[in-house]
Image (cartoon, rainbow, N blue to C red; front, side, top):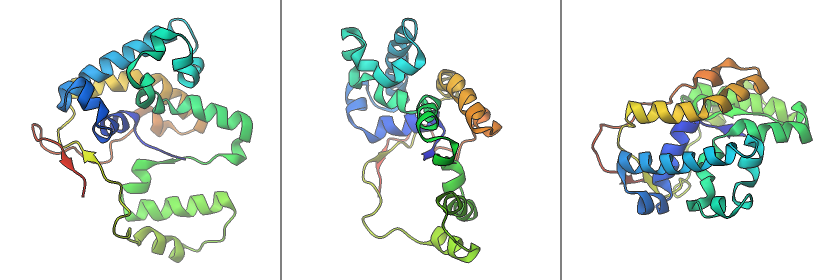
Length: 202
């Protein structure tokens, strides 16, 4: 699995799936309204049930949760530790491999190292030159997903709020993987200048 900083993932998902700006409004204000409603619904669930039950069965836990817009689906996808714990329980550590999005896509060198780790996990013989060739390969035309990219800067107070929501999940993830980087997840790259409208991905 490849996991991304969940705050950045949620920000991108809001703009990628156009039903969310349609419901909550566009730009940072829309993300803030979306997060307030969705995280509030999750908190109400967590007050009654375990994080595991809320993440895995949210919309089935009652009409009040079923009626939440898209059942907190994008919010809960960033609660990686809940799902990883399920995988580890059923597959064991030998059956699960996790890479960080930021390490894979941050640089060609990081991508080559990630490819080599995945190959070792899969039991494949791959020399450094082959890993480097795969890392430097270009996507074919049309292979990139279509959609929208946000070009606003995420306001620091909003980032801090969303980071706070995910902090317990990230701490649990760090514990499960034995990797402290997940406690203070780095951002891959800075956002575009504040105030710009989103643009269609090319």
